[in-house]
Image 1 (cartoon, rainbow, N blue to C red):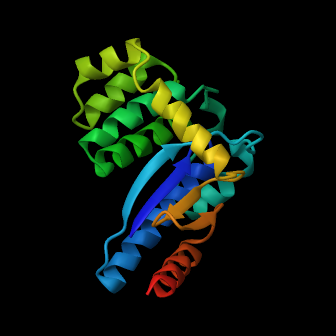
Image 2: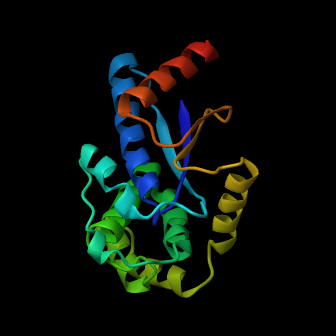
Amino acid sequence: MKATVFVDVTDAWSYIGAVRFERAAAMYTILTGEPIDIGYRACSVPGAPPAVEVAPAARISGIEFNLDEIVPADSTDAWRLLTWAVESGDDVQRELLHQLWRAHFLEGADIADHFVLASRAALYGLDLEAADGLLASTEYAEDVAKQRATAEHLGVEVTPFIVVDASRTISGVHSQDDYLQALHRIARDED
């Protein structure tokens, strides 16, 4: 199975839902032996609730927020970096995305700052100079715009928005068990 997950780096529900979905996907693989490849794409959801409203849901999922330190930021450059990172593999992109979520929601880092972005990329084995060069340019800006346009075309109104095998969707934050059940239903329907 292939899952494409539309999220944003500055959206708390994206973070919580993605963590729960990843855990459900891992459990699905353990139970069935069938791996689920997960890739992430940018989306913008206007009017997302502030992190303070989702902090209790985050704690249930083992995610900590430092609400006093969150720096409002445009995530476009973060997504340009994440789009480049996927060239090194979905796992690299996912690890960098989680690092950026922690930086934004827990550490109070400005994820629009190029130094913050490049140094986080280097932590995950990406070339620091290449990351700096990318961020100093407009490289991947069109790709990010296309990802966001695709999300808009798909009617994404809540995050995460998950497209499984390019045909089925799961919208919004659910429990890990609900995501797992949805994956089982999708697999049955495809047989």
